[in-house]
Length: 106
Image (cartoon, rainbow, N blue to C red; front, side, top):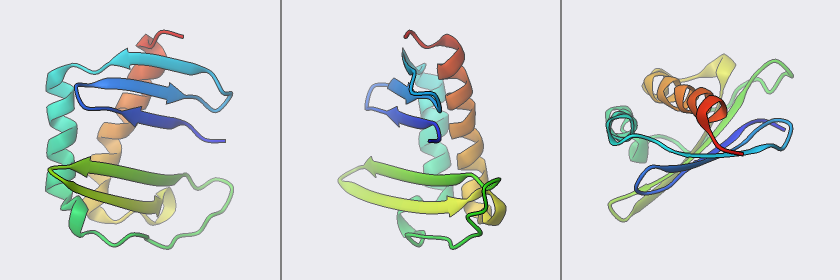
């Protein structure tokens, strides 16, 4: 199992870690704005649903679901074949995983 980060409107977050531990916290509005900007800059709603990659054991699979402004979209990509538009977004989301796992309440 890999980490699963869920972020909700208003900044509430839940992280289910690899070992099944649940962490909860609230992301500050500034960080939430940075994440929303990363989705916009990536042109997320126009991206293909899937970027085929090598699903080798060392590759991280990213399944990203995003809804905003009445639009919803899902993109799947692997760390060993990450498309350029997703790289800044993945960095922001990875930072959130680290922050929630450190600061989150169990």
